[in-house]
Length: 630
Image (cartoon, rainbow, N blue to C red; front, side, top):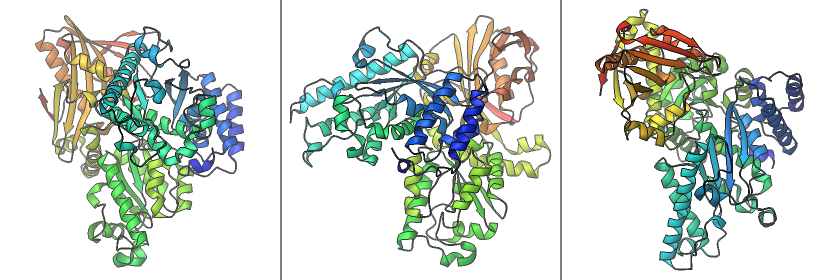
């Protein structure tokens, strides 16, 4: 493994070893090292020596087990038809670079069938996810050459196995499976894919089946095949160690594989990037608009450089279509900076694609802070792209939580560096994800209106907000599950439920499950809240209450609570109880229930607080939202 495997990361700092020594000294003293310092150290172009030292640091941090660590804990099960013993240490190191504390539990060798079909549980503990890495040895069905029927039967048997593994993971460990796709096989002929029974054809059919299952929400994917293709099979597979040590890929690429897996886990935990902040000159076009003018910048125009910038802009638009919000941060005069967006015939990105446009002569770090505040997103949610190495370094120093990608100065490589970083990795998309960029744009527009209107009530009235509250259903199930498992800050209990749990809730007469959607005159924000209430005669208990931070301070929670008490009153309910379970990330809602009229019933030893409110005593809150209760 060399640093060339991570070209998107910043170069190794000259004082890297000194910084590590400082962190280790803090750790040796029994204190928790600074989160930002550790993450910054791990997220560099590590050589072999630095990689090993980062792995040891991760192990020490896990052993210390600091209770309020900012690193999001992930307990990952490893199950494969080959040994995965070389993955845990690189996974732990890769997790630090993405704000995760990944601890791995490996199943005994050759446990695939027993885990899938027997009552035995080789893990014996709850997991956040189970990574399953299979090769053709896991699928024993005969596939005679040119026998299409035998191939179909083998694929059906393979699907039965992965389906059983997914069900076993849910039943035994309470988690979802991440299946690795199968790397391409070495080909004897260019006709391999057209030859039933060939290894290449079987693997491709397997990967399509796995992809279909992921699309249906049955499991998640780690695209090992794509990574192996990028690296090259001659680098990915070590034939000697494959046969001698039973490892599915070369030890040398383990850090790269671990980083790719960590990207999937980061997406699961809601830590994927949500915003892309873009420089302009020599980043979206060639040249300097202020000096070269509209006719002088290089964009399209049948030139290699200009075409590279057009391709990059098209790539950015695909990110926006996946829900990534776009912002501009440029040292420029505002009117001049906007001219290409308005008047250049080959400009792909338009002004209305950009949620926040910051073009001035202020420091870029200051402008990025302003962008984050306008969109109400944390700095860790942003990726910054700039062709200027000095500007990249400045932002890294001032805003280390912002992911500043080392794109270089050649636009031909911008797409590759961003895609390979995995920072925008995501779970299977749903319509709510796709509308998120529009929602953030609407938030920015609303913030501008708020700045102009002094009275807050008048501001909320001016938004023309409309809310829909509907029961859980099939159409919303994927997004409901996503919110339940990704929301951390505005989440009263942080209880996690999978898609099958949510499906069962839809038909449970003793449970009320609400999906909350919001729109205003600027944007349709989609599903922004989930409420789960358990019914027990005259007493209801709020099991889960979570909201997206996209629509804070708009009276959403007051409006939903009013609707909940109205519904409870109609059902003859006397009391609604609730619980707040504190975590290291949900302090912002510590006073949620007292603000909304509940009284404390009990303060428990584990730090949780129990509340209650009599339905007859509840006073509806003033709101500025028109509500439709389906």
